[in-house]
Image (cartoon, rainbow, N blue to C red; front, side, top):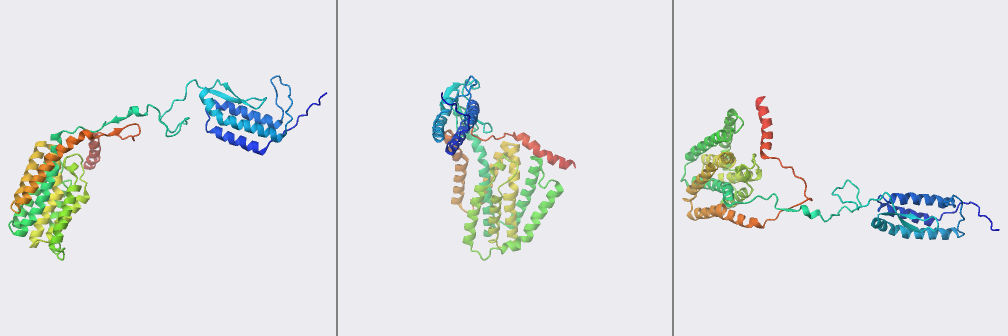
Length: 416
């Protein structure tokens, strides 16, 4: 009669245990809802393997296979590792659960009641764990692609009207160069320039007050104070400015002036003149224009000429953008009239000095005002701005709301 095998604890091979741990780690990366049942069953089989005896369905003990412990661990670990490597794919395809049979250690795929009947739908979120990689996109990703959604339609005459700000600034630069040339030649007295500066200064303050409802300086007293500081500062600095660049040659001064004024035209804030923005930026542009005026002042014959030339340049570059800003916002007709007046004034000052330069200036104005807008409108049809779900969200705040928010603190300060 065969001898009954006593219940004893089977040794566990270290290599088998390490492979089983690595298999569990690999399985963690492919877990779905159906993998929970397989993990629970696998843990139960490990506990039974350590005890050495498992129960069958009737509850009676069964005899353990008389193989060497090392052979049992090797067979068990090999079959488990092979099954674990292929289990996630098979389970995902069949929406089922892979379990280990207690009798022979093999794996079977059985239907799970906890599995979903439909595959997991991909969502465009990163905070939710999904069985997809982070850079995964489905077939509906490009359905939200939009081309030229926020690109405005260009109209020729609208672009011509906007280019009038460039024409105005070109006329201002030509006038700021022509006035010191006339002072140097003696064809224009300094007293006439000072009278013109006074008229322009009063006109600019009146335009800002009437059309813009804003007095430069905040109030009339502050405005008068700022004008006094500007005129007095330039007057007392005239002797210093007259001798500031005496050791520099005239050719160098002219070359630097041309470069600085070209940089001023490129960097100028044209959006402010066109009333697109409410604050004048372009500090670098303003600094380049003032530096060019200081360089030209060293070529003047007297300190009075320096005073007239620098004061005229400061009014042209520093104060005129505010008046033109309010004129553009008040009336389009007034904006066009201002452009024509500035253009005519620049031609009157430039034509006596050089007819070819005046013709070149007229050609540049025609090119900038009429030809460049035509070219821009013709190539606008080739513009392709792509927007889609990959873009960052940009809040759109109406300009009226921003103006109301900016006017709130000013009104509160005035009330105090």
